[in-house]
Image (cartoon, rainbow, N blue to C red; front, top):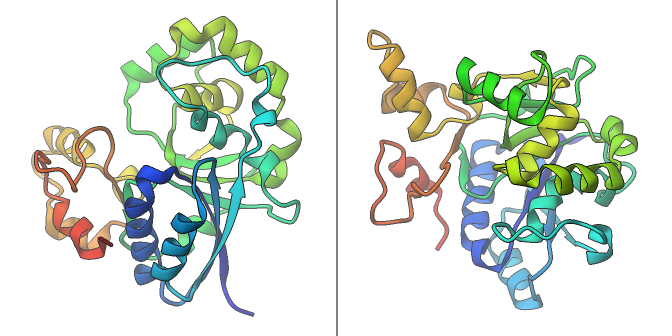
Length: 269
């Protein structure tokens, strides 16, 4: 039986090229695997889909999931963010019933190594396998900000293995919308804040150096570890996923960092 991994992404028309770069890196770095990629979207047209199909590896099967706006009936209006912020939260309700596990990947990243270990990791009773890139002070601040206890950890939702089977019955739209309405003024990143508040004590943490590496994290890590710095040679040898977090994107002229060459290796134009 072939090795098939479920991948979940959330894109819009403006991110098609970056999505294709991510898929190219995924297929290139995991040539022995086949992927079922679920694409959550609301604005892709037929020409977008035809273009995407023309560029993907034969090891990738796409399933476009057009998001039903009725799913967000009663959702708070958030000026700073589009409704796409809700897609990751409600993904367990939108995926087919036979999907039990999925690896969510942002489109501003590249898969630089083999995903077998991460994808097949035991949840050990948890709902997510993910990384955190913040340290003790901000962890404590977020616990205070969102009213949770010390066993909660704030994860980066750009890379996460999701326990869909266990999450599906736990997603309560009314409770989530009520939480956003009453706490919107104190929230920073809506999807991350929501998942943190409801499920932050059900996260199996993994190493961001391996699975969610950014130039920002390299900078902070090297400041704290001057005798064991991460350089491009270390990244080439050890890293699995590079995530170009924030505004520092490798396709922009003002990019700063050491990870641009790896993005360019997989880039689809």
